[in-house]
Image (cartoon, rainbow, N blue to C red):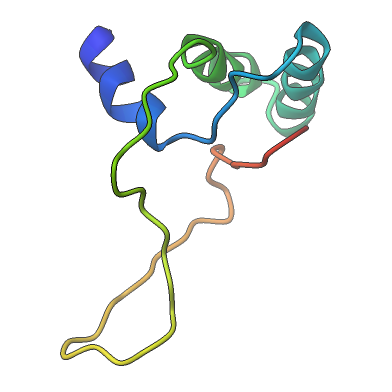
Length: 87
């Protein structure tokens, strides 16, 4: 569990300033999106609540500029992971 959090939490949005009400709003939002996975996905943010380690070079995807090779960006509209600053 700890190794998974060490990978997930530094790249996740910073939630260290969230209140109990913020987490509850997120839980309700995720439960509305998926009655089967909403509660499980809301727990992920709770694990990262006090994780204040941030990456030295955060991943910020950019579609600007030219590359020597093509990049294929794939997204699934049914993906239960939706990152937002606030819910």
